[in-house]
Amino acid sequence: MAQQNLNLFSLSLLSLATISLTTSLSPNCSGADTVVATTPLVTFLERVQETALGTFGEQDFDPKLYVDLSLKSNLSKTQKAFDELPRSGENGTVTVKDLKVFIATYFDDAGDDLVYYDPEDFLPEPEGFLPKVKNPEVRSWALEWLCLVHVFREVYYWDSYWVIRGLLASKMYTTAKAIVTNLIFLVDTYGYVLNGARAYYTNRSQPPLLSAMVYEIYNRTCDVELVRKALPALLEEHAFWNSEIHKVTIQDAQGSNHNLSRYYAMWNKPRPESSTIDKESASKFSGNSEKQQFYREVASAAESGWDFSTRWMRNTSEFSTLSTTSILPVDLNVYILMMEQNIAFFANVLGHKSTMESFLEAAEARKNAINSVFWNDEMGQWLDYRLANGPICKESETWKACNQNQNAYASNFIPLWIDLFRSDAALVENVTRSLQSSGLVHAAGIATSLINSGQQWLAIYLYLFPFIWYLLT
Ligand SMILES: *[C@@H]1O[C@H](CO)[C@@H](O)[C@H](O)[C@H]1NC(C)=O
Ligand SMILES: *[C@@H]1O[C@H](CO)[C@@H](O)[C@H](O)[C@H]1NC(C)=O
Ligand SMILES: *[C@@H]1O[C@H](CO)[C@@H](O)[C@H](O)[C@H]1NC(C)=O
Ligand SMILES: *[C@@H]1O[C@H](CO)[C@@H](O)[C@H](O)[C@H]1NC(C)=O
Ligand SMILES: *[C@@H]1O[C@H](CO)[C@@H](O)[C@H](O)[C@H]1NC(C)=O
Ligand SMILES: *[C@@H]1O[C@H](CO)[C@@H](O)[C@H](O)[C@H]1NC(C)=O
Ligand SMILES: *[C@@H]1O[C@H](CO)[C@@H](O)[C@H](O)[C@H]1NC(C)=O
Ligand SMILES: *[C@@H]1O[C@H](CO)[C@@H](O)[C@H](O)[C@H]1NC(C)=O
Image (cartoon, rainbow, N blue to C red):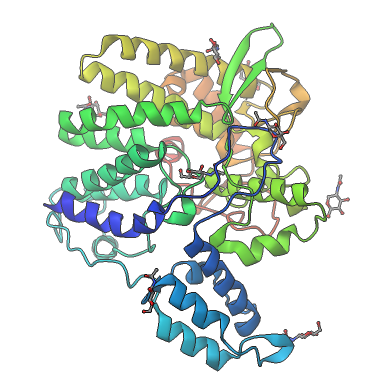
């Protein structure tokens, strides 16, 4: 029952997304693709967003709010009323009063389309909850957090991993499975998990942690049916990340080829949820194809979950040099390696021997690729690799040491998250030493980077991966 309810919940969010886009893009790595149309509703809401910026001004302006508004009436009627609004404000803007009345008349508030849901497996104090936390104040604080449901107005892909860890700690297995079921539904519908459950997120994904979620739930519940349901979706997701635009082949110094993956959003326009901001950032470029490439880089950085970090910039003090699609990221490839191992594990659970064998081989190949392309022995870290060919797809390119990004990022240590690397004690010691002298470790957690560019995330950020606890304790 709970699962059905949650599915309905996600369907209501997704109903927007079923309107198909009018132009599709063939897999083409040139990056200078023609602009594709988005849904008429999203296009219209972007116009409302732009008008609102002119009317209300930049202070406290939240562009996402406007693309999340839900229509009270039909689109054509709303659009007509909008076009008829008087432009009697300064510089031809709509006045604050007129726009407020229009929004109140034609829209429900952002989030009003959410259906309230009371999970049936919620326990106010689950048995064995945080057994190591003895301090009563900290315990009651943690238990209060258990009741905190709404953080976002929609489901986000990689955030769900931590939500599921929390649900499992709270013994809310039914709800955890329902979230995974919703993410599988996205793969069945789109071929990959969307960044979030919104029509305007249909052209990018996020760090692929679905297999890790299924693994964690299976580990607690031994639910073979969940694994049976998830495996086809995981195979499809794996193919997505190893498709033409996401896959790059690098030839190492010994002449061996390695396949690795990159972030690459199928999008070359401003992100609808931040359209006004993206247009402003792109105003540095005069050419249309340069703007389109920049928009793709912005959307791809959003896909990486590190939006926005100097990791993706050619010049760390210049946002317009964002070049996410020209980088082979360490963390993405570690997540995919983990996906390959998990798929092999699930195939074994279901008795699919040949799938298990081919994914064990794929994992082994990716481990070699990670060590050949990313590992830097002198630094004791795995470093992102910058493609000399940029975003362009080529048969393969040859590895050069100077293309490793030597800046310290938390992602340089992510391989230690998985047993495959963590089981090598000498390596762990080396990398731990390197982390400790990297400058990233602070009392409050691990900083994502040492470069203060003023971008979101670059302040000290709690990178709550289990391996961090492993290293520091
Ligand atoms: C965006 O995603 C939709 C839905 O998956 C797809 O139909 C469309 O072709 C994509 N657009 C581009 C430019 O790839
Ligand atoms: C890729 O895009 C370029 C530039 O837009 C175009 O000239 C070329 O024909 C495209 N190739 C394919 C296979 O679509
Ligand atoms: C939208 O609503 C108007 C007035 O209520 C109606 O005349 C029109 O047919 C509707 N359009 C659609 C596409 O439903
Ligand atoms: C109107 O335009 C002028 C000149 O571009 C500008 O200085 C002023 O700030 C604008 N006013 C508003 C409310 O945007
Ligand atoms: C769950 O994980 C623990 C710790 O890694 C492991 O020892 C155990 O075998 C796992 N259980 C299952 C059913 O996979
Ligand atoms: C890389 O991918 C190609 C297919 O595109 C495949 O033929 C080759 O075996 C792969 N290489 C490795 C090392 O897995
Ligand atoms: C990087 O960007 C800054 C700020 O735009 C600029 O001053 C500097 O010259 C740039 N550095 C290089 C190497 O291009
Ligand atoms: C450990 O680090 C040193 C340099 O700091 C390096 O020479 C050595 O090969 C590393 N050992 C391992 C096992 O990675």
